[in-house]
Image (cartoon, rainbow, N blue to C red; front, side, top):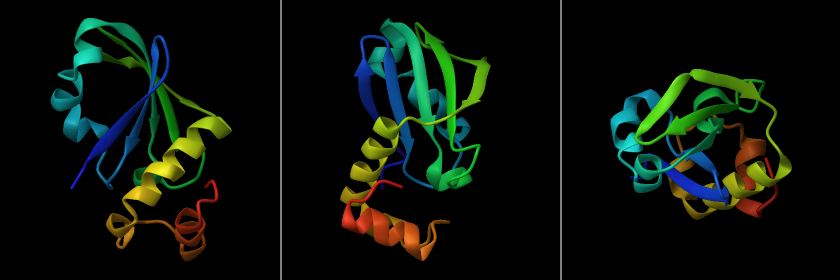
Length: 117
């Protein structure tokens, strides 16, 4: 099972989608060893839909620099439609993994139908 997926948004901004119910802190060493984190600096947008639900804590932004995620820069942000669309597309691909997630039946149906959550 995949724990997280990255998508490049622009030159120095990446979206990390949590693909299970665990915090990214459980995978921090693995994430920091990703090639683009190790050799670049930029912003990491984290979608925690499967961790925190579809509320105000869903999206977090933090900076990364040459192999280190700067957790002290973490802050809640409002997720753009673009981010939500990417997450929905990814979760639809891995729909079978959502069976025991915290998502409501309505949210699961939206993902299955490709409607943005």
